[in-house]
Length: 238
Ligand code: SF4
Picture 1 (cartoon, rainbow, N blue to C red):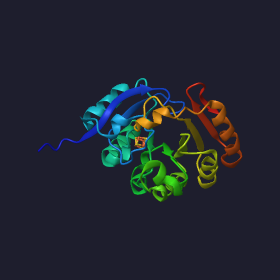
Picture 2 (picture 1 turned 135 degrees about the vertical axis):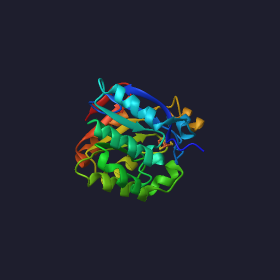
Picture 3 (picture 1 turned 45 degrees about the vertical axis):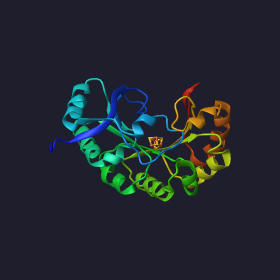
C-alpha cells in the first residue's frame, strides 16, 4: 500500500474574491459531514480526486509570484485536518496569508490548526438551537464552541457568515443569530437557487438585495461590522 500523503480535492484556482483584499490560491477539498439543502458545491460533498500533498505544495510555491495567500475551502477542509495543517504550515513558512472556510463542526480540529491560520470564515447556518432543522445535524453547540475558540484567538480574523435561505430562515432567526455570536465581521450571503443539493430548493426564490439590506441594517447595531454578499451588488460593507 502506498504511504504517499494525498488530499482529496475538487480543484485549485486563483481568485481575488475568496480571501478578502488578497489574491489567493484556492484549494477546494472534497467531503463534508453535512448535507445542507442549499449547498452550492454539492459535487464536493461526495468526493473529489486524490492529489499528492507534494504536488499541492509545488503548486503553491510556483504561484508565489502572483498570490498573497491561500484559501482552503470545500466541502469541509477539516475532514482532512492533518493534511490541511501540513499545507497551512508550509504556506506560513513561505510567508503567505492563510484562510480556512469551515462549518465549525469540530472545535478540537480548529484548535489544532488555528496557530497557522490568519483568517477563518465560519458558517453560522442557523440559530444554534435550530441547527438540526436546517442542516440535518444537531451541531449547534460544536459551532458555538468553534466560534469562541476563533474569537478568543487574537491572531486570527473571524468572519461569521450566514446564507439567508427564505423558508429555512426568517428575519427573527437572523436577529437571534446576531445576538448569540461574536466575530470581527458578519456576512449575510444571498441564497442562489441555480445550483443546490436539494432540488426542491430550486423553487425557492432568491431573496432580494433590499430584503437582505433590511436585515443587515437591523443587525448592524448589534454586531458593528456587517457585510452583504449579493449577485447584484457583490460585496457591500453596510
Ligand atoms: S454548504 Fe458547506 S457545510 Fe453545507 S454541505 Fe455544502 S460544503 Fe458542507
